[in-house]
Image 1 (cartoon, rainbow, N blue to C red):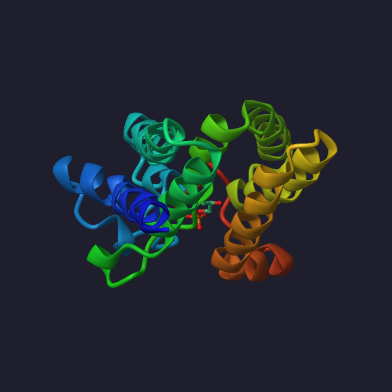
Image 2 (image 1 turned 180 degrees about the vertical axis):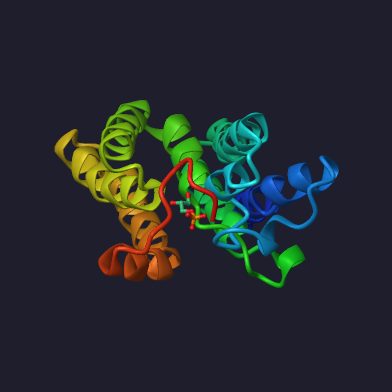
Length: 194
Ligand code: G3P
């Protein structure tokens, strides 16, 4: 158990690095939490108008989840699952930002890539299809978050499926205000300024 807690803790620390905030600050763009949706994720970094910085935020927020899982994977699947969970929680609830973190989509994908690459393919297809058709990043994430646990169960990857049921529920919780805006037809589309 102490080792599982260590995996959770290391995962959390990695996940709690707020790359979107750091990258935009280092680029001299101020605090990304003051623009658009106020989120620290790639979608909101894109609202600064800097595509490269948004892409970098996406990659680094995903990679911290991937790295956490791969480090713990050496000790076994249980450790990998726990470290991935920790990284996701770190992104959503970083102690450094008063526990007000991101919505978890990139880190979800990063953890998924390392745990079950088939799930990451399902995520990518669902996300890209919905984003291409609707231009809503949030709706794309929500559809992907429903698709992934279902696909993992169908593939017989039960343990990852169970983890991603929990992660998807948290993704939905973190998208509460996005869901309200989507229902009201007021959600900002990709490419539009917040
Ligand atoms: O990845 C987060 C995305 O689904 C929504 O971001 O900034 O539009 O709330 P945002």
